[in-house]
Length: 475
Ligand code: C2O
Ligand code: CU
Image 1 (cartoon, protein in one colour):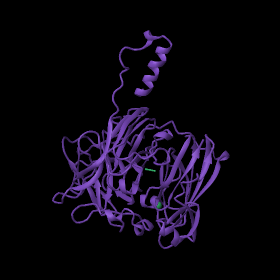
Image 2 (cartoon, protein in one colour; image 1 turned 90 degrees about the vertical axis):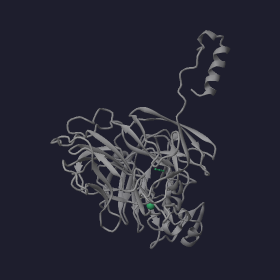
Image 3 (cartoon, protein in one colour; image 1 turned 120 degrees about the vertical axis):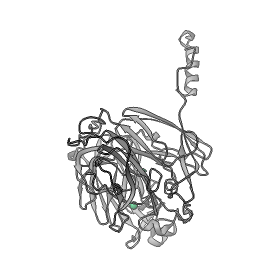
Image 4 (cartoon, helix red, strand yellow; image 1 turned 90 degrees about the horizontal axis):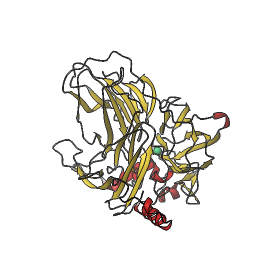
């Protein structure tokens, strides 16, 4: 109860002459925990390099990279007062949470951006278990790249950890990509770089795991571990490998899958994967998390280091995660068909598109900082791409007519991948962010059951900034 509504209640009770009903002491209401966004320093580059000035989240004390882990059980509330100590307006989006619209943090669509010195109270229930994250949703291409991102873990509905075939422990691994200069400072004149925006986005040169370059991750020899992998980078697609650890995928974007062996885990920006790994009894120096930096090679970004007692390796097949049980199944027979055509970028461009109500050629668009369009509209925030009646299944066909892959994210909903033409998705998977390669077509479906205005955009955030965004309305 806010102080205002409590006052209203007291006045109302007094007006009814019901003083006896007025509680003498305030109803126990813990103060809302603070999530402060502020400049901070972080040791991102390896030891020996200076610390990097970043923007980050803090609960109390100094900000940390990644932001503090928010952890709760499915069905519990998240309450955080965002306090903005940044020099720019900001807002927090709870990526992947099927949230009520007013709490979605998608400034300026669902709330006004929080001005420097201001605050905003977020209060919502997280009903679906899984691995999620939170991040800035105002000038995200700059603010997320400066460090405003953290993990949000919604624990399983039924006990899974420690059960036969499950893992005995879990590690949250937040993967990020930073564009640093030789002094380990963020290269700041590239936030709005149209050249990068027209290509693969603002790709960095330093990949960190939990805010550190090449960390050692402590594990016990022989143990089965669940890794919650989160890609918070604003542009880099991360092909990941865990050689010798027989990785089995158990969830994508928080949604359980039937455990399956994976050689490479391809995580686009904003995507998550939960993976079970079996540590060998003899950990070697090369027991590591590897990434393909984009040239087909595999380099280590974190090593697993043996600490503590050996445990007996599990012989059991991997126990699936408990199902959500909360996502309505799409009904294709009565669905509403929509299409999303992506155009623009270097090498192909587009002949014309509408920007702020005006039709422009590619040069005209570029002079306005726009190089991408959805359905012929760049930065389509004036009107929804489509409207859906609440409860209706939307069947969306997406076509990528550009030369670059994109990471398409829908707010407020998770969708099923129906069909694909490439190799980045498996039909049947349920996600909130999907990769679509050059010239691919992908069909997805979801029940539009969450009323409100929901953003739909590329999570390569400089693509979003330069045109790849729009929204749909459910209601
Ligand atoms: Cu993760 Cu619109 O964002
Ligand atoms: Cu994109």
